[in-house]
Image (cartoon, rainbow, N blue to C red; front, side):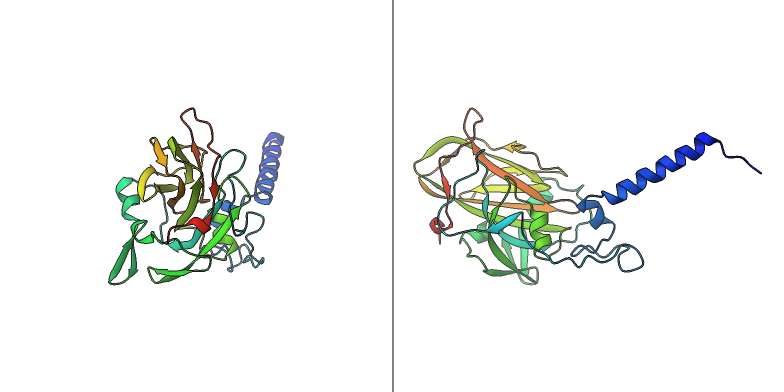
Length: 270
């Protein structure tokens, strides 16, 4: 009989315990990747004797609440929490390695139908209302007026809460910053997971390229001017697999957050 050394047995037992703990504490992203029944996830091993399909009722809480009428200021650190978000448009991407400038900019040209294409944000200058619908790539998508409960906007949780596809998607976001006076030499500071492009009053001011995690103030625009009154902020985030989210705020020349404004959809250009 072959005798297994005591140290080998102890190593195997420790490894088994570690794997069990890892499985028990597995984060959302890993669970979905293994086919835990996430929306649009393709099932993986779920439904074939693997992990069971997730039939938990979906909700946007606690990550979002419906936006209320009127004005809302940024949070204590200047981050914009009120956004008009479009339900995710599926793009079938299985990886994030090709998010260079050409690819990401070309993704802003969208087939509305087999014969008609539109471009974001050029053809989105009219600010939508909560519940408005648009067809992109044969997908009927609705706009949602929401306040994020956090400094960042968790797009993955937005899609999951609405029972929409969470991977291989593109998101579109719009908001209206209402300034009491002209603000010069401010900069838009953005972080996103994964790639994204951002516009202020129809002018592209910053892009975030490549496969990246969201980091606050990851990329900062050149100095720009916010006009007195309504300023339209638009952005689009594109992702394959991954936990999509973003955060955005304005900072001054010294890097301090700009907070002397409100977000007010009622002031949106029509």
